[in-house]
Image 1 (cartoon, rainbow, N blue to C red):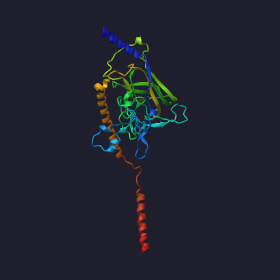
Image 2: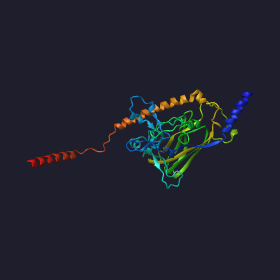
Image 3: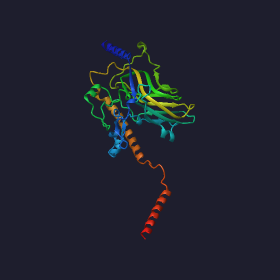
Length: 365
């Protein structure tokens, strides 16, 4: 009887937590400005201090310090990538499709005037062909990276006592991760449309490493607009819900993290250039737990989640580190000449030197 009462109480607790919806900013691109790791040639910052990650820790001893320095990356907007599907992938589209930091005018009639948002250019095929492009970060955003500051060179410091006590991880608070997420109720994207007929999707990944995409709508409008996805299976009436109780540990505190956008072009619509701008992604969700502050620090005691996440992150570090080194080696082999040297100019220079030498000899005589 006592055991049955405990199960009922647990179910009611979970059901009660579902009644409180929260709004949170999943990712805010105005926070991803470059503010550290200055370029040696230009002196301009290249990485975002809050989100900088050093993947050189997974590199071998054969790499030089210069190569390891290139394994440092972040969520700074120029570091994001455009991945084209096979129908859209050609030399021209691969060369020109990219992500930039787009400054908003100070005179703009929006709350984020004067800040930088994400600017995207995608080259879709001109012929009738379905195509899509994924706008993704340079690395899979970690969900359990400890919160800690970084210096101007992007070196991560030891977490302070205040940061440890906060219970937050590095990529929360608008940098790609939201914790304690039960059921998603709505997703909102603030974007600037430019009358393109393409469709937009938001891609999210949960704590079970399952990625889902959510249809936000079409981009056939002009100016800034908030596109909203509402969960069609969301049930507001608690009595009509199917109550499911899951073990809290070691499944971990449920979360969602941002894995990118997907822009889809229908073969019947116009192709060529697509230009888009994105400010942020927000979510409204039910809490998975009323409180995440537990009497016993389960993870500190058992370390199951940390081990699983470390293995996943190590594999990601190795993959990304090798990719960055290969890019460095390819860049070192890149031809820097923009035009041929003229054989005529070389001949003219040589003849001029010969003539001047002959004139000098004649004057001596």
